[in-house]
Structures are given as structure tokens and as C-alpha cells.
Length: 510
Image (cartoon, rainbow, N blue to C red; front, top):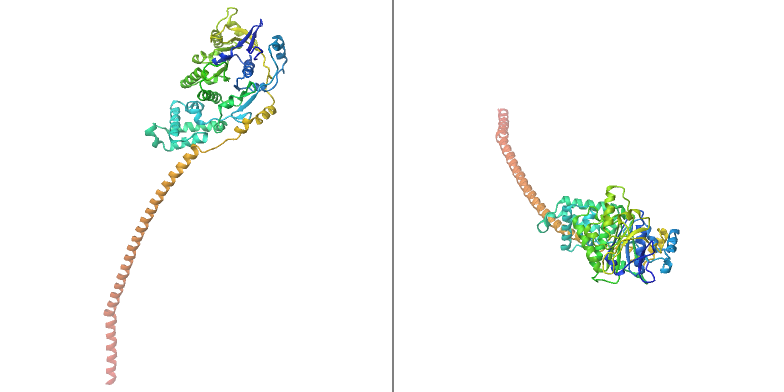
């Protein structure tokens, strides 16, 4: 809670010592860890409310649907009322209240649709999303480079699929300038896209894409708490973690440098952060480290939420100054090692054993160490996290739906836009190219037909001449035959007849 003394009052010790987060140090990032069921989500809710009361917008992924309760007035649990009375919080300004909320959802069902351009995601994050190996990722990078050089905007999945198809079909044209493009790698990328499309992830890519300014709104003197509905998204851990990393990267790239401020411009909660680093390539880990290191100068505080500090690479863990550690249970040697590592990440307090305390903490109790005014870690304290001022647990689906559809942003983002991009440009280009080829093929075919017709005409002329010659020869043969018959048959026969007639007449005269 943001108390009457304008302090970010987060926890209280058993002897009523207040533990406050210095607003100026809030952008030095933080870490909330603990086993399942120890109170991490309630801690997140308390922090989100406190930042909202400070006028700082918040973005948080809601993996279980519980965080939506910030939209309703609290006091719905007796345990909360008991703690409020026990800690005398009303004297410090505690008041059950609701907070301004904006619901988002990659799938556009339980929140305002949130979209990104494929270009914005880039080959590194998209390669992780598609589970590509180094060779395939290199080919994907080439595809992005070709599209950029050609002026093809890759906005949605069909743009990327069309670009891949074109590059694959015309790989020989690109090899000289861009390097070898194997059909096998193109095929692997296309299969990955089909799998994501089957899971419904394709609808995340498109327009209107998210305007970062819409995450940094205030309502009166309160910062808006942006809640990403992530229950379905969590079924694909790589998709979930890659999406949040994309958003963090976009914040880093878009926001201007502001240096040290009295309070953050935005606080970003990265729940289930271990998913980001699980099997992450070295290049991605380096990108996360760089982003976390530099984004605080943009006025953004990043708070990772996970099981243990050992889930974070040391290069990232060292940058997380504000820490809250809930209970850990050490059942195995691996658990014991993680518990010991968690204890060693705090500045020790001579009043108690940090390692022992971690295993003894009750639900809602935590070890807390925030940065002091000089940016140094304070001694760890064992304390109880303050209860939320809003409702603990999810709101009704009908209430959520009413809030979503009543938002001005919903009217802008609800319907997807499909403008001319890589798909249309490549289709037009190849159709024109095909028309030119068809014209050449037609000319070639017509020439061949003309040549064939000329050949048939000449052949017919030869046949006609041969037939005419044969007819002439046959006529001459017939003429010769008739002449022979006349000479050898008809003439002698005529002579015989004449002689016979003449002889008969002579006998009668006698």
C-alpha cells in the first residue's frame, strides 16, 4: 500500500517494523521467489496495487487467473481482515478499494487482443518460438534480410509463409548475395509455423499491433494495471516466455532515456521467469541481460517471479536489487542446494539464520531486502507481506467481459487489419513474372506451331507432286498399253476381218 506518509509500505515485521520500498529504487528491478502456494501471487498483487497508488502503470502476466481480483474492492476474506486489524493498517491509510485495470489476451478471448508484427519479433526470438537449431535460425535471419532489402513487410504469418515460399523456390537467385539457403531449413521453419498456427498463435501476429503507450496509462492519480491473461498461453512455455521477452525488448527499443527518476514510468512483472531461461540459447540470455541492465535508464522496473533465485542466470540475478523470498522446501539434495543458494543471495542479518528462516516461513511470510537510498542492499528482514486492498481471487467472467468490451482500447484493437504487405507484394511480383514467362512461352509455342505447319505444308506439296507424277506416269502407261493393244491386237484383227470379208465377196462373183 502507498500509505499516508507517501511510503511504499510492503511488509511488516513481527515487532511492527515497517519495510518500505523506496520509489526511486523501484526501477533497480526485483525478484519474488518461493515454492508453489507460499504467497507469491498475493505479493505480486500487493506490489501492483502499491505501484498503481503511486501513479505508476503496471504490466503483469496472470498465469492462474487470480490477479484479476484487483479490479474489485477487497475484504472478501477473513484472513485479510484479521491481518489489517493486527497490523493496524487503517491507521496508515489502508482502505479496501479497486484499481483501474486493462485486460489483455493474445487470443483475444479474455482480454483485448494484443498483436505484434513478425518484423518486430525478429529472427532471434522467432527462432526460439519455432524451436530452430543454429543452422535453421541462420536461414531465418537471411529470410528477414532478403525481405528488408526487397521492401517486403512481414507483418503476419501469411507474410512470413509467402516469403519463405518465395525464397525457397528462388534460392539460386539469392545464394550469391546472401549465402546458402537449404531447402531442408526452409521446410523446418515452415513446419514450425504450421504447428504454431495449429495452436492458435498465428492470430498474435498482425495489425493493429500494440502501441506501448497504451500500457502506460493512468486513471486519475492511479496507474492502470495491465493484466495479460496467460492461462492458455502457459500451455506453450516457450511461446509465453518469448512473448514477454518481445514485450520487454519493445519497451527498451521504444522508450526514451530518462535517467534516474523519482519513481518508475512502468513496472513489468515477469511471472514464471524460469521458462525464459530454460534451454535458452546463449544469444538470448545475453539479450535478456543487456535489456535488463539498460532498461532501467528508460524508467522501467522489471520484477521476475520464479521458484528459486537459481532459476536466474547469475548475469541477470546480479541486477535484481529488491528481493522477496517466500518459503522453500528442501526435500532433495537439489532442493537443499537451491535453498542454500537463495540464502546466500541476501545480505545477512545477525538476528537470525537466513537459511533456516527460508525453510520455516509460513504462507504470506517472506524474507525481504530492498535497496536503500544509496542503492545498496539492506539487511534481510523476516516479515509478513501486507494483504491486498483489492479482492483476492478471480472476478466473475461476466464482470471481466463487461470491463473488456467497455474499454476504449477494445474498439481500436478488436478487429484485425490486413493491409498490403509481403504476401500481396510477392504474389503480384510473381504473377507479373509468370505473365512474362507465359508470353515468352506462348511466342515460343506459336513459332514452333508455325514451323510445324510450314513443315506439314511442304510435306503435303511433296506428296501432291509425287501423286501428280504418279498419275502422269500411270496415264502414260495406259496410253502405251492402249497403243500396244492397238498395234498388236486390234490392227491384225482388223486386217483378218477385212481379208475375210474381201475373200467372201470374191467367191460369190465367180
